[in-house]
Image 1: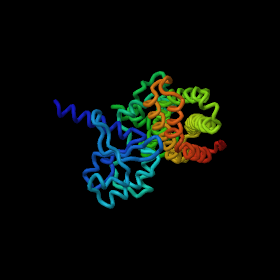
Image 2: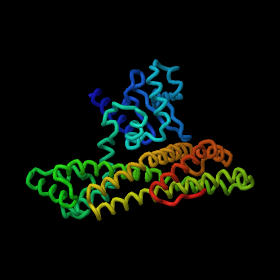
Image 3: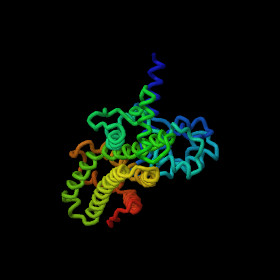
Image 4: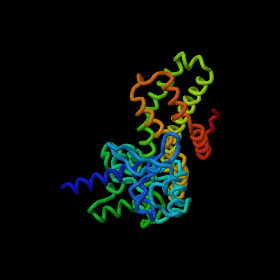
Length: 350
């Protein structure tokens, strides 16, 4: 029984790391050094990458700089090159990894390592419903109220009545102008695209409440005599606040843009419109993952250090804000503006 429980814990831990936007298990990467299989890459609040050799609730975590890994374990020169390349990525979510690994020349990665876990997909069902329901309404004639949150496309089209399945697929073929044999692959591709948007929306909303509290925390900091009477410190806090507000609002706007893209697709369902929609969204995976990863690690660390707004005096808060929250924000702002440009959204000057 102990082995079964250990295997389950190991499986759950691996899935959690794979689903995370800020961690990359090196067991998923083709490396020759066996000692690296239990390590992972992690992002910190400054958007820097460390190699976490081990982590234990009691003894803590041992993290080292990527370029120093050979000081702690035997690694091949080629492994070091790969780790150095990976450490330069801004996000480790599976969607941005797909294109980034290819561009870095890191191949032979198991396809499963670039997929969300079944548990995460299940958890995204409520976010996915808005993308699934148009298909169900148009093809099966069911309203959203008839669908269960856990249903996805593969379950919906699965039916023991072969004739019914064929008839349903034929309906899709007629509406899309595709060949019948192309429909299963189309549904698979569509599912992957909407899951990516659902994942980023979930990631964004997971820190929404923390972001609101952080902005309120900054307002309180600005009002203190120590900060208000020091123009330089006040300017720093205001810049942090301005960029965080911009990123929060812009990510929400980008996600809304994706939703409208799906809506336009369903008004004109065909292979070409799907390819255009898919390209627009996948071209944004890298920047969406990068900006969200930066915000998430910053908010998680801030929440850990300041679990409530009564923790720490003005000097402690100022030091944390300037040392941990400010570094990298300009880079995030620039990446967000570049993403807006690709989507045809107006640039925001800060």
